[in-house]
Amino acid sequence: MNKSMIVGAVLGAVGVTAGGAVATYSLVGGPQYAEVLAVQPIKETVKTPREVCKDVAVTRQAPVKDQHQIAGTAIGAVVGGLLGNQVGGGNGKKIATVAGAVGGGYAGNKVQEGMQERDTYTTTETRCNTVTDTSEKLVGYDVKYQLDGKVGQVRMGRDPGSQIPVNKDGQLVLVQQSQVAQ
Image 1 (tube, rainbow, N blue to C red):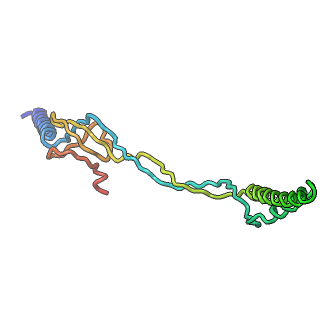
Image 2: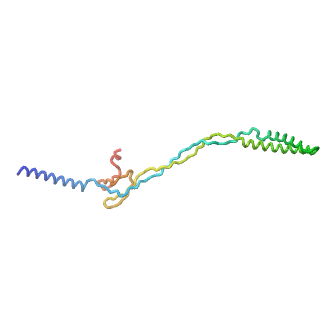
Image 3: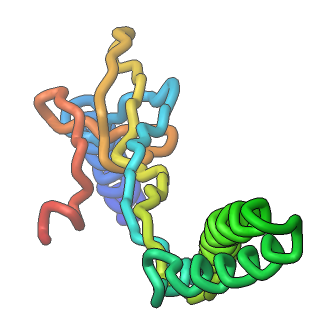
C-alpha cells in the first residue's frame, strides 16, 4: 500500500471515530437544559420597630404656696370693709362695712385663685413612641420552565437566567455547583 493511502485511511478512521463520539455524547450524556419561560421575584414585607424620641415644651402650674387663698381673702375683706364703711350712716354704715368685708373677702379669694392658676412655668420633656419601618426582602423566585414539551414551575433561590441545567436522570439542577461545595 501506498504511504499516503495509509495516512488517509488512518485520518479517516480517526475522523469517523471522533464524530461518532461527539454524536453519542450529545445524545446520551451531553448537557441538557430546561427552557425558562418566566421568572417572578418573590418578596416578603419586613417590619422593623424602632423608638423615636423628641423634646417637647410642657407648661406646668407653679406650686401653690397659699392653698386656701387666705392672703387674698384677708386683703379683700379689709379693702371691702373700708369701702363699705364709706357708705351710709348709723346702723347702715355697720351693715355696709360688714357687707363690704364679706364681698371683698370673696372677691380677694377669687382674684388670688385666678392668679395662682395663671402662675405657670415651662420645662422640656423627652417623649418617645414606637414607629414601625417597613421594607421588602427578596426571598426567592418562582420559575416557570419547559422540559421535554412539558411546562412546570419551581421556586429557586436565584434567578436562573434563560435555562436551568438538567442532570442525567432528567431532574432539574436547582443548586449551583459553587453552592453545593460550600
